[in-house]
Each structure stands twice: as C-alpha cells, then as structure tokens.
Image (cartoon, rainbow, N blue to C red):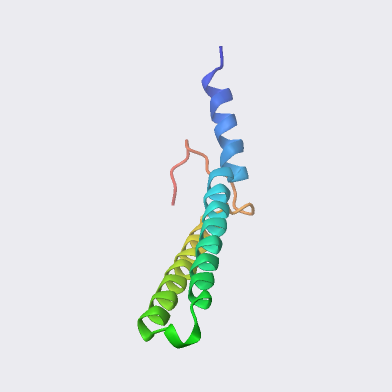
Length: 96
C-alpha cells in the first residue's frame, strides 16, 4: 500500500515538473496556431475583389483574441513557477 508521504512526494514531483500547465500551454499553442492558419487561409482564398471590411475585421478579431489569450496564459504559467532560491517554509514555526 502506498503511504501518505509517498503520495505527497509524488505530488511534489508532478508539481515541480509542471506537467499539466505545460500540457495546457502546448495544446493551446497548437490549437490557436491551427485556428489562425485556417482563418488566414480562408481569408486569402477569397478573390481580392470579394473581400470585405467585415471579413478583414473578423480575421483581425480572431487573431487578436487568440494571440492575446496565449500571452495571458503564458504569463500566468511563467509567473506561477516555484522560486528555487527561496528557503523552505517550516510549518512548525510561526511566520513573521
């Protein structure tokens, strides 16, 4: 049977490797890149005479939202990392 200490150690390893945040950022990057590619491909596949201001606005909006959200997602990922230079907190000592 696996003890509580072993489970906590495994959770600490998973947390330090940051598997799930990396998976989310990577998945969103691939999906967002594919979506941008499809929207741009659709826009440029139209004849130049048939492109409208509304089409250009749609492309601009989609690309801006996808890139903006990726920026926010990556910033959250990079700011939530562990400070490896910080001293470990002793739960038995009162914190100042």
